[in-house]
Image 1 (cartoon, rainbow, N blue to C red):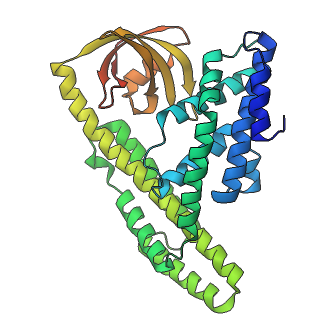
Image 2 (image 1 turned 90 degrees about the vertical axis):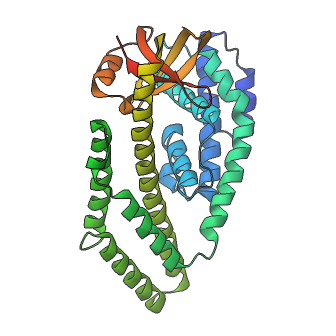
Image 3 (image 1 turned 30 degrees about the vertical axis):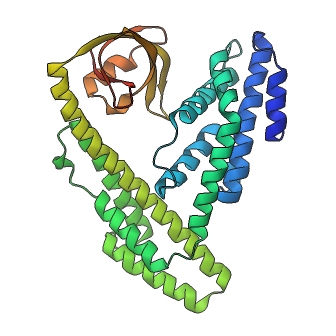
Length: 329
């Protein structure tokens, strides 16, 4: 299906979602809306290359989020946008790979209802990103900020209290060292800085302005990657601290809760969606980040299939959302 975003929405509105076949076609129309917006906005403002512009909604949205958060155009992606797009992506995959799959109309309507607002939000934030990238930030500043971010990201895993967080920190350290080893010689952050400065000086001296701009773009993308690493490490630190605090809270004020699995584990997001049943008079959906659970809890949860009940100890976050403290059975 190939249409303009506006035409895709109008087409979606013509389908009868109560009809099995039309609801499947509606899924494709809605997904095409999101991919066409991401492709157009990403190509103009977010440095999407042609290969990425031809990808489906998942890879495009992941790159868009990473670029916007890496330079702090936004600190957090609105949860209703992420939830609706993740649900739409899963629905599209289920329709594409299951000839007898009937889409959940609630998920389609949620993605439809936010479509216009999401497009305006994405366009505005992408333009902010583009202005930042296009500003004449000195290369020295970019290089220095990249170095500082990478040095802050290389953390001794033994500083954490939880094994699974130590594992993730080792993975981050390995990714940084691998990139430095393959792209810069030798592979320390300081030596990378020396090589970057040398390369920039050579381009400025011997190559035309077009090549000079390309170097600026590459430096910017390296800076984004470094900031992504730093944000990942910051999240590990807060997770480690929060889990310690929650562990204490579990001992003093636990809330038993029954959940049922709504969506199976999604490797691309590392999440399982659960529905909380009447815990403290609430009944709502929550996303559980499986990779942040201890190994025993993760094993139990990954063995569950859609519709199965999960007994868990739940907590309530600062903004009122549920999170899983411990999986009981």
